[in-house]
Length: 68
Image (cartoon, rainbow, N blue to C red; front, side, top):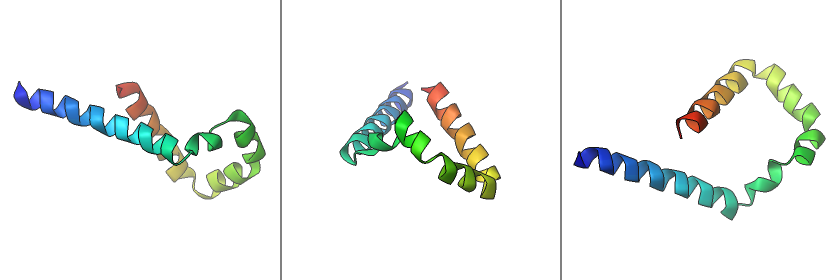
């Protein structure tokens, strides 16, 4: 029971830390619709040169996001 609570606290701290770093480094400027539209060609080129990596990355992001 105590170990389960420690795991939950660690996950909460990890997520809180990730959110803090995201805002501290001002990364939200890269995740706007206009930013994605401006960089569409670069993203497509990167996707076509690293298809497996992009697919794996998106699947991992989806899994983590859904788990939380």
